[in-house]
Amino acid sequence: MVDAGSPKAGAEALPAPALPPADRDEAGANENVRLVSLEAIAPTPPSSFPSTALVRMRSQPEGGERERLQDVAVVSRCDERSCLDGLRDLRTGRDLIALAATRDEREILDVPGSVQRVVKLAYVSDDVISIYTGATELSGGAHANNELACATYDRRTGRPVDLTKVVPPPEAPTLLRRASEKLKAFLRESGHQGYQIHKTSFLYDAASARVTLCALAPMPMDGTIIAVPLQR
Image (cartoon, rainbow, N blue to C red; front, side):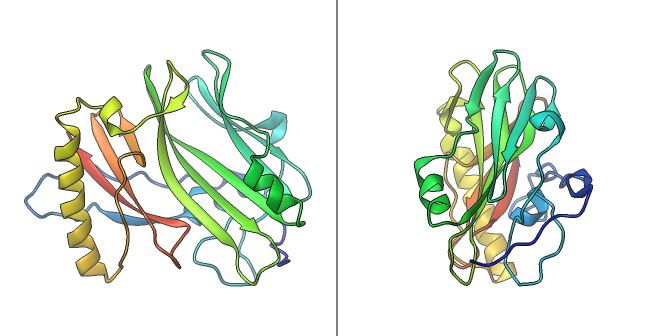
């Protein structure tokens, strides 16, 4: 197993990543589309070995709470081989993402391996919570397995939703088409390939009516997304 190293004191205090700016709605404009890396969502000290995106071993936050935005908190539980973030709605007391390891995570930890599961708050409103979700898993191979996506949760049900549950259903296909056009233009200019938009991977800023579609990465760029912001 590759040793991911240990963080320096105060690593979790590094600034949070800037969220994608608002869409300018110009025909064909893709200036605000950008590549986002897992290591920007959960900043940790440099590693001695290369990775496209990697979350190294983090420390247990004081009181178990890693981050809070309004009445929503990211909670965390860490030990010598894992650090698992969860998502708690303080208004209802409901855990939207539990701290317990999932079946897949338990299989990695039984190898034995290590797991860093990341939750990063993006937007909170009365109705929905939008987050970045990510993970770095090490199970004895030469490289880490990384993931990065976005998700939006319905605070009434406590479950993740797709775009049609946040915007009126007739509007969702239009937003997906606009996002796909902007993504294609960005991919042509940047030389990246294979990123795909999914209606379940998005952020929603209710205050500004902004939707950010998160295009998921192909191998070997796992651990990155392309954020495509749109103004409704």
